[in-house]
Length: 300
Length: 330
Image (tube, rainbow over all chains, first blue to last red; front, side):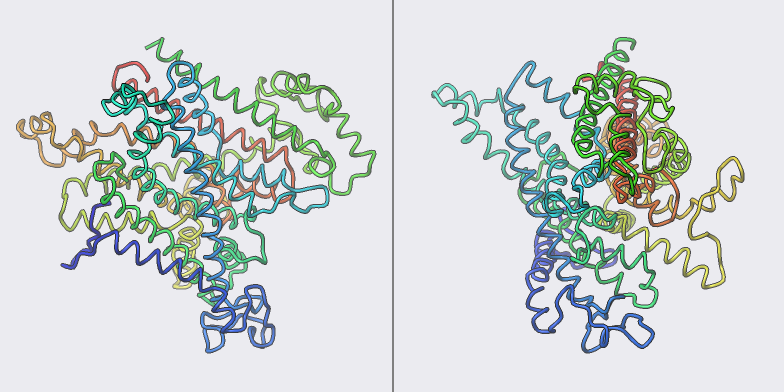
């Protein structure tokens, strides 16, 4: 992605960072506005309006004054559910990515600083972590998470956050380890060492400031991937469970029932929200990269 | 080369062993409650106890690890133990069948899906990536950038439904029933129907990766474009097409191979979603229906299969890179 986002056939160029910030800001605003919209419309995210939300045939309503994006097969408000679903995307995506960043940075620092067998061990550990297939491992853990009575042992939201963080910290650790290794014997660290700084002091004062902008960029690269991961798990039925709305389980609902052929917003609502969340974060990360980390080797 | 090969293979074997032991750990965790995890839905207390006995769940963990890896007691006449051929992946009491048989039964569908998608994915990514690099900064570059941006921002769960809606539903409504909505026909029984049934799943699965890899290819080719041998190739009088698609692409292929190997390995994840949307009865459907049914042995069996696939693909791409560079593996 280039520094500026240019649209074919147009002269106008928008700075990618501002455009990404605007899009992502809109997505965050939509998520924050969810309770407000629910209050104004009087439609909770799981409330079913069987008389006003369904027609005589029991089919969902198309967009109208009461249901701005129409209703779904249970007579629930699609707009309110999309906003709450976006909220879930962020409630899962933000902590999962941040947790992965913290764990990955810590492990990457230690691995990058250590030599010999510690470094070897880390390399082999990476191989094993990468060999775990994400969705299937998530399926295994979701299966284990069912107690004898069929109820989950820990809340599914927490499990989804942990699984996603458990798979994305690796990429942070690999990035941080690489940078730490390249700094380990450089003039910056040597100067600090000569002046008598301890290893934690060196890592904190000399290494971390170099790493910070790069992990900030990488955080914004991982965030959309993790939002998609949550949506995919929920789509498959092992993430956020209905009736709690998530963009993934709403898309699954629209697909399974086929009702989106009658009421397109059933699919378009959550689909567009997911697309905008991912696109906004992608543009934001491209903008951040050109601002904070112009010489990065990351190219995608 | 022999040394390099030995090193790569022993690393792969070690990774596989640790993966299996980790999966054994998950299995132990799951089998703490055999009633919820293993026994058929309406099993009696005696039935549950019989399942626990058949699996020797009362023996110590190292004995069980031995059974798990090397050779376990037969369950319902099925051989157990992963280091046999075919590996004994456990027994599904829900489906009353050995997990290995269930998986072998579904593998052709998933392999057909992944193989076709990989061909489409790389064909698109390499052609569009080099095309964009060749026309860097011009409208072709912007156009392909915009396409890859849309591909990258459209998750599989969305693109699959859109592909199915436009190319199946709308085409069929318009009187052009080119593609069926779902189902699978074996390659051996009718190659044409096989391709027809898989065309939409292939497009869907390829699209997700094509966007990213188009950009990777573009970057990799531009990286080598300024080098002397590209100028030499041009000076020899080679046409622009050959310079870009043979020389530059050939030289810049390494990152595409490394990332491609990993992504092909992890494609089974995407196959789960694609198989769900297009009603293909493959490994992914088996995994997801088992997970929703709480049939743990099948889920962990598919996890091990997919993990082995990832290890295989990353090792192959490492070896390919090593053969291209003719230098020891890092």
